[in-house]
Image (cartoon, rainbow, N blue to C red):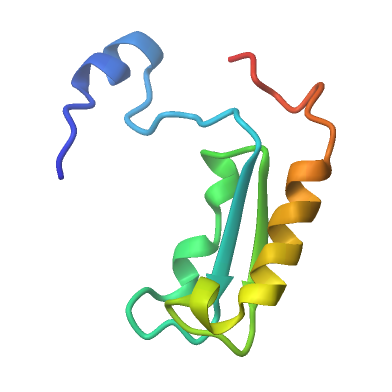
Length: 88
């Protein structure tokens, strides 16, 4: 999929949009398809990101470590959302 980011750049001066919503990323460190380096520096575009890297899991982390993923998700969803940066 490709996106036309020219209108975004014209409006904001940026080609990469900022995601202000609270965001959870759960990543298997042994992912052979997507390198863990892709998780580094995401805070630049997603300031309210919470990243959990699971050391003994691969690409299908939700299937390989379902209990751990569920615990992480439930804890994230329990967090109060006020002041988490919804405004641009």
